[in-house]
Length: 146
Image 1 (cartoon, helix red, strand yellow):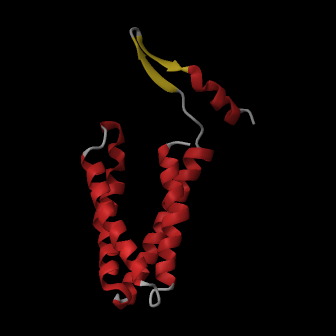
Image 2 (cartoon, rainbow, N blue to C red; image 1 turned 90 degrees about the horizontal axis):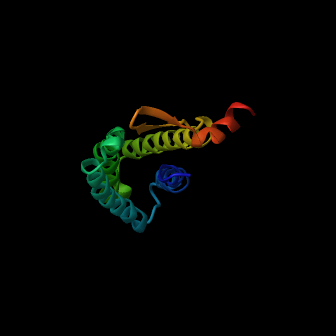
């Protein structure tokens, strides 16, 4: 598993249950949980801002994910974290929608890149042009000849 798989698992098993807990027990959640949500937003803004501006060129496709966090997710976390149990119900419902979006997105990515999509042969440059690196052929063969 690569780093992205661990990020997906973290969101599936840690983030989404945490968000569901806040939604379900919204009126009886302790201030500590709301403070954790607020701290998560602040740390997340710093992390995702850094990643947005210092991403390697081959990973620029992730910009949409970082912008979604910065524009939608973290402002919602901050608002709920500040207002705590006085937050209007509609914002908790938006939090639930964000939770289901995260669960769907990260579940799909984890399953697709680890179990559904077979590894692709790598293209490697050479002096005579590009050639296919067949070192991944054994892995690909497992998927093709099951």
